[in-house]
Image 1 (spheres, rainbow, N blue to C red):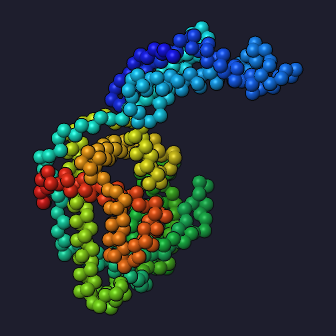
Image 2: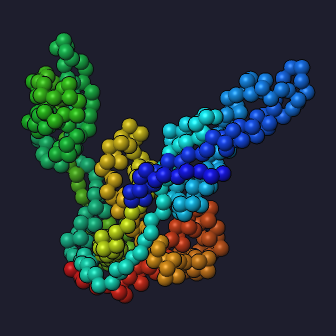
Image 3: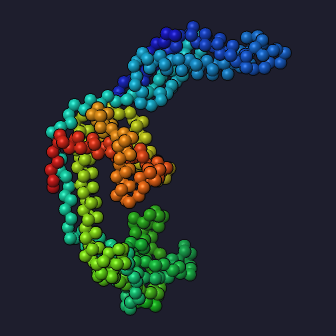
Length: 414
């Protein structure tokens, strides 16, 4: 069939085309649809397929029209794609469909096309790689975190101080001024678990003491109805405890794992910190380099791909449905940047024949198994069951692409 195609929008990766199907083709499609419907339906007094065409058209007009439109739309889609040479990124959609025997069929086709990525500039960039130097302060911080995990709380006399764990009975008067029974809470002073005004009351008490006084709720309190209000509260301090950290010695090292001494534990922590810093520095420098390449090689991307990336972020971060709109507004630029980075990596992998294959994945799994002391076949089956082989293949490909890029650009160490 001959159709008329008029471009109404051609911006970026978006295309809008006004499509018109001539009345003669519409009539033909209707006749064919009526013939098919007449063979399928049963009309009292007539054998299947023998009912008068006029009767079938009258009783099943909606079904005939629907079948005719669906067929015409499929044919029109195919002709539009062929004539316009569209490399679609997503499934096209028909909007504002108008269907009538005299007017023919018309609709506006909305579609997105795949971007053409030239990548004319990939060399000559200079990026700064963050420092991966391990400092003594980093090691001390890690050791302190381990000590925190093994810390104990011991009762102390006197009023609570910063960092103490207190047990309190807390009650707040209702709107009628009635003070209910207090509820027990355990709070760490200075952790922000209660509003500052109540924490000040607690700090002024000694174990066993009770005070009842008016307290003002802060202006930034989450519940707007309570912001700035003053309410009578009753606070009873029942217990104060101080955190006691275990000493850093060989006994502590033995508790943390198979370490013969504190020096052995410290050495293991230093190695772990060094590996983490290296990974972070490598990732940061790679991101910087890709961002430079993104900026130097502009191309259009389908909006739907950005939406898909935002959806993936939302699922990964478990964003509630009611917060998706706000989240999309905040993550839009990041999602678009990530889509561009991924497209550049994929384009380079294909163009330079750097994509990993099945043999590469097998070799990587064998390497991982040897390092872990596991059977390679069992590890492969485990990764396959978890759906992680594709992720592993992607990781190998990205490593190759980045190696290719790093040979052609300068990475300076901070």
